[in-house]
Image 1 (cartoon, one colour):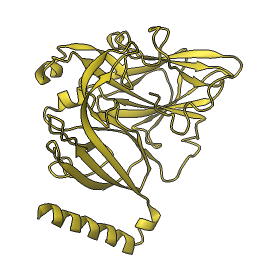
Image 2 (cartoon, rainbow, N blue to C red):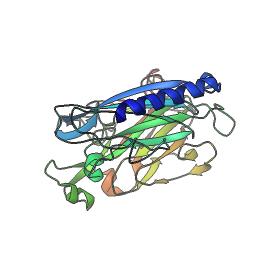
Image 3 (cartoon, one colour):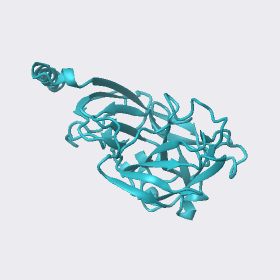
Image 4 (tube, rainbow, N blue to C red):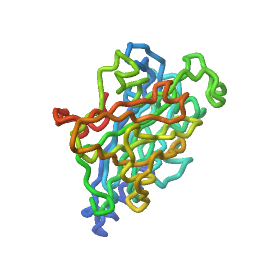
Length: 316
């Protein structure tokens, strides 16, 4: 009965929006994910860890909407799972005891929210223990593009990449261990240690690419459960940095951006236009960098035209 009443209320809300003329001004974006507990490859050599995921991947699917859009979200908890799971969108204003409640294996949770603020936001599982669920890979990114589009203070980039930094722990680490760092093995970028750094891992097969002089935008989210990230482009300077990815929160010519856990930033890098160069994008906390948080950006004339565009913002 409770589910039926809630569905009726949600339908009434959508009807009211339509009558008010609001639905025509905003899209309704359908997003569905399935919580899956699976073995996931976490380095370039094929090492696997038991992870708790959205759709079987770490990070989960990239969600991108426009400010003002209504997100209609459905979470399925695979019946083969052992754990309860949930969804916490940092881009949403909701009820932690309702929309963000955890659901048991085999159950489904549906809720809606309006993306009211532009920026780059983390989403993650909030089920108990949150430290274990997040550190096992239950996180991802939602980008909310500003309603007004690009501007002088928020110029259009030539390419965009999404980078998510997380933790990797030994499979036997308990929730309490993870909260105090026991069993920490390293840092992962988009699910793998040294994912985009053949300089530091000869097994790495991917790098980030751009052409000399291009404006490359990085949407960076810190999914580590305890530590901030000191994000620095070696051999470069962040041209502009937008805290939380919001065009109003702009800083210029930054060497290093401090990004708190469960926080995001949007950062632009422009390489010299007169020659090919390379940048190493690092967490300047050395235990993180040498634990896997180094990515290489190659700036050269033959850069792959598809990388950083379309569906290749988050390279897997």
